Length: 144
Image (cartoon, rainbow, N blue to C red):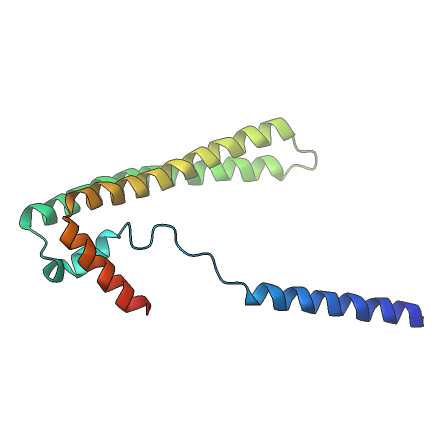
């Protein structure tokens, strides 16, 4: 009985050390920070960055196109996730079928991310170097 208590205490110590080490690790930084800016941030600071009327219209138009596409993708994702969920509820899962369905889910998720990043890239390419620098200043102030 004493051996079991010692083993249990040892495992608790190892677990606490692991949790402590995990908590001390820095979260991964955003690889896009300072390089890509959400449309909401741009529009929120449109006067501060000197956004032209043409640029405002471009951002609005691109955002509307992306929202339509993302809505379609979200509906498709929900449908495919539902199918995947149904396939894994079985007592005996057809692995090949489930993995094929997972591939469909992952493909839609990839397209959602691609749509988001594409939007941010198109918007960035419409901004001037000075506007980008000003947005970096704004985001650095809010983070720091």
